[in-house]
Length: 237
Image (cartoon, rainbow, N blue to C red):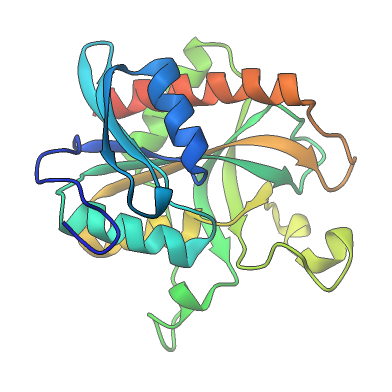
C-alpha cells in the first residue's frame, strides 16, 4: 500500500492500461473486462483488475498531466511489480494527415516538461516506446484495419498556452510531431529508468490545424477501438 493506492500485493496484473480519467478506467473495466474487481479508489483515482480473453489485466487511472501519472506509474512498477504499461488517451492533432478517429501510436514523446529534463542535466533524453509493444500494436491495428499513425507525440505540461492555436507549439508540427497530449514522455522515461515496457496509444479527437473534432458519439466508438487494441497488446505480453 502507498499514500495513493490501497491495493494489496498481487492485486494488479503484470500488464496495466493507463487512462487519465478515473471514470474512463471504470468504463473500461465495466465494458471490456470479465470479473472486474475494484482494487484502488484512493482520491477516486480508480483501479480495476479483471480478465480479457481469459488473461489477467488491470486498468488504473493516472489523473491529468505528467506529475500525476508519474506518481501512479512509479508505484505500479516499484510497489506492485507491473511490467507492461499502456497509456490509452486522447490527443489533439498537429498534423493535417492525421484525421479525427485515427490512432496515434507513439514511437517517441517530445516534451517541455521539467520532470524529464531535470533528471538529465546536460543531456536531451529521448523518451521512447518499447519496440515489442510498438510492433505488436502496429500488427494488431493492421489486422483490425484501423487507421493509425506511428511517430512522435508531444507531451505538454501546458493545456492553455499563452500563444493561440498552433503558435503555442512552435516548430514542432514542422518537425513531424503528430499530436499533443500530457503524459507519454514521463511514462516512457520511468519505464526506461526501471527496466519495464511502456507504450502510449491515443485517439485523435480534435485537430488544431483543420479544427475538425469528434462528436460525443464518434468519440466513444473510437475509444472502443483503441481500448480493444490496447487490451490485445497487453495480454499478448
